[in-house]
Image 1 (cartoon, rainbow, N blue to C red):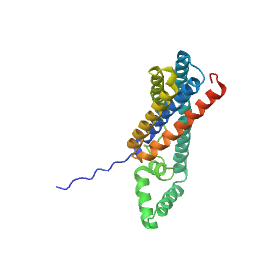
Image 2: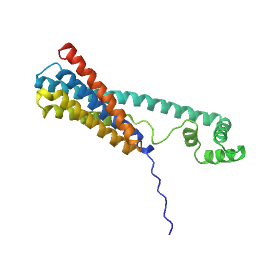
Image 3: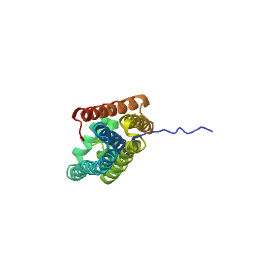
Image 4: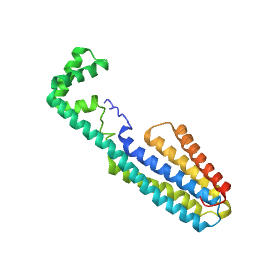
Length: 231
């Protein structure tokens, strides 16, 4: 009995994966950087902890609002294109059929075969064919504003709580190093999870996210030492 080949693709995950990785990554980096910057200038642990919590709340709300507005704009554009394409199919069917044929010719089909494919696809679902092949729409990357907003807020909060826990469990005299070190480890873990989930290169993802996280924390720690005040 011949075994069926099962293909594994990751495009279906791209929408939620992007928002999840971005949210958690920002949560760790921004909150850890905020804590490290303030800890470099102050020894009041309660004040630093309050600053971290405030950063978590503000960041989560900001991420949710930003994602919702951004993805809503994408959704509005998609809806506008859909309405326009539907009208063009109604008013100029021959021109739209020719456009579809030319797309398939540009992809390597002979004009005769391209014409047959365009005719058959148009007969079954003309709008779907044009949305997919002319405009590049895909169910895997269709804009979902509410999903993106909730995912970003939740993952930002999860990422932000990690350096806050690091601060709570650390003696104040080594808080900068504890929060920085643990946050870099968390970033490396996040980068690895994101790479495995998305099917990308593991080492590259880990190096990329930890490098920029370390830079952010180093800069804010430097600012804290330089001014010697809460920033």
